[in-house]
Length: 186
Image (tube, rainbow, N blue to C red; front, side, top):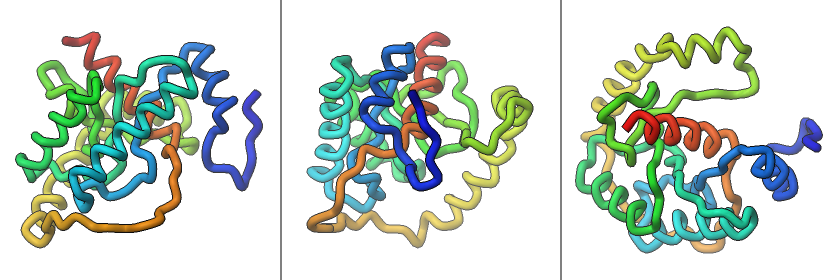
């Protein structure tokens, strides 16, 4: 069973399997949690496919949902279009971005918004987020990204020997729930 620890950030594979057997779906979130926008397309494809295959191997079940790690470059249509194509080719059914908000009918299922949820949220705060109380943050987030976009360039980085990690279960679990809601709505 799940044991809290002040020094442990991620779930063990045994804990993931236990939660999966209880009905929790796990989605992919990259292998090393990089800034994908700064990586080469070969690296990006490796991050999404290796994460997906490891989780599928560990759970014995397909992985069809993806949660973008951070800094989703929504202003770069060429990048987001190609990224969506990679996800489709890998067999993903949907993906959540780092854009704050709730998914709506008609949203692109490969560029869904998501809500930040963490262990500090009580039931009242979670309910408020689900009912739209955090939607106003999306306007601020979008304006902030728009101001920074002209100063940001996509430059693939080569970082040899980075340590691997699957990513936080919280991000992928939140993404999976959002994707499931979007699929039910469409």
